[in-house]
Image (cartoon, rainbow over all chains, first blue to last red; front, side, top):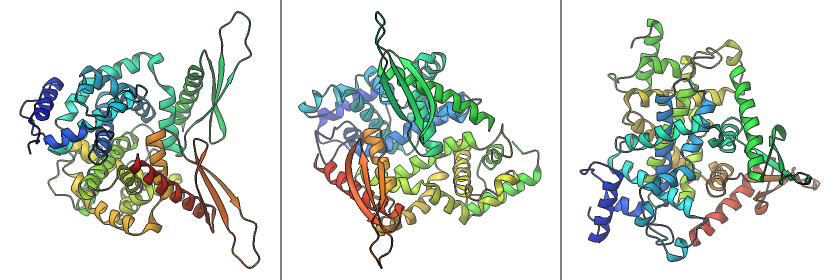
Length: 240
Length: 240
């Protein structure tokens, strides 16, 4: 099906080229158009449903990638790495590297919403991948494309512990095993003259303390506590 | 690759037949064997990793099914129905209808764990679907098989509101939009002579009350509160 706006179709064709997808991709143009339409631009026909499908596509692609690439990793590690791979931060980063924003139809008010930019780009990328998947009903197009990105990102995530998002990893773990989220309690430490501001965090799961940590910001303290909890629970699980 | 135990392979072949899959399925038998090996039977080689992949397979299959079948549903409804379709309860029910338990290798101690039976069966079914997906690297085998089940189940879920698991639906919604879980506060109501015991529940999201409900059990009160919150937030979202 051709779009009624030839200019939009040309634009979308150039996007596929940018993404490095084969020229003769049997893409359904109206789906790709939808995938790049923000809810503020059209309340009825926008990327929301495609994002729902695309999110599942990305998660399966990441699962398969991890299975193939790291056969010796535990499921806890799979969860942790995948939580990062499919995070808004990473997906927005990939979207940005292709200048996806220029193709997204959205209301001017939403365009000014800087705080929502990361989520918006991640959502749009998921929707595009959903559109490509539904156009062909196979993962053949999407998998190799995502794998290239995952390969580099996973290596970085695994090699640099500081990059590791332990809060996301811990959340994946407690959700899948206990169907609950970890809870954080953060306090500012009594300031010691001459020392920078410090925070302490306690992370609890089902009311039980799983870890504590300190850091120069609330977030850093939470990450430190999450790291302790995540590492501990991994050890426990491998002993069970 | 053939299994070293011809009896096991024969057993697995009969399972595929039971599932109604084509006889010439290019299945990797060692993966199917792994999918039906509980962690208590082998701590090193069991279904855990395959379940991770299979869970993603089932979620994508459900997303695609909903997209194809209910094009007019909102993403909130998609989330709600999918949460049910991929629940342990439903997956264990499907597994049971094929007598999957008889094929699962597990330690005698785990076999006696009645409380864990539902999760065990759901996990094993996910792992089997993961094994079938990874054997062929396409969803061609798995999608039509799951669709048959989803079709009937989704009709039931949509037509019978009492079947609807509003707690699961609300949780999906708040997780995807706010990255938090709803919190419930349940109180027993002052008993009125001659009337059965009643409970009230309040559900809060990010500290704000989203709904209240009553019921003859704690769970029923929570479901009632979740229903109010879920319906309200759907209305709000469609107005945004």
